[in-house]
Image (cartoon, rainbow, N blue to C red; front, side, top):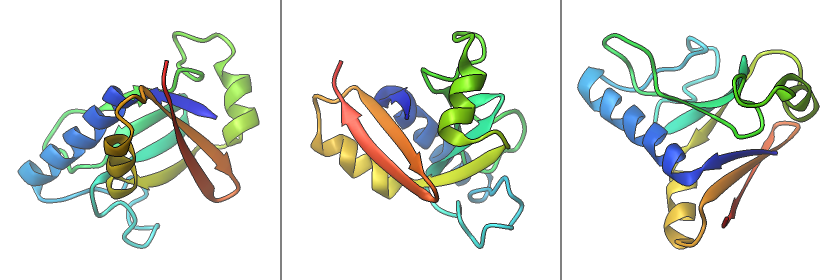
Length: 131
């Protein structure tokens, strides 16, 4: 399970939408190997050097917005590699999560402060917690 503050998740989604509006759409970091996945508002959950969320709007220049999970930030958690391997696998991997799946969940649960993301095979489970 990976935990992200909801405010950070909203910022990643908002940045992707703003970049898409300014630069002609959404981008797929897999370079079209995922069949139009990511061509709509949302974010990418990425397993690389840590586990993080990445905005999906096309960029004119610069880097996309990233937001690391609490458990797998390379600077903040010395055990992030072990945790990542156990919960996301060892190889680099990306999964797309649609904004239309996240925003209504956030808007219905005003007391929630964090998003939990649980991976089980190809399924992505989402739940909210309040801290």
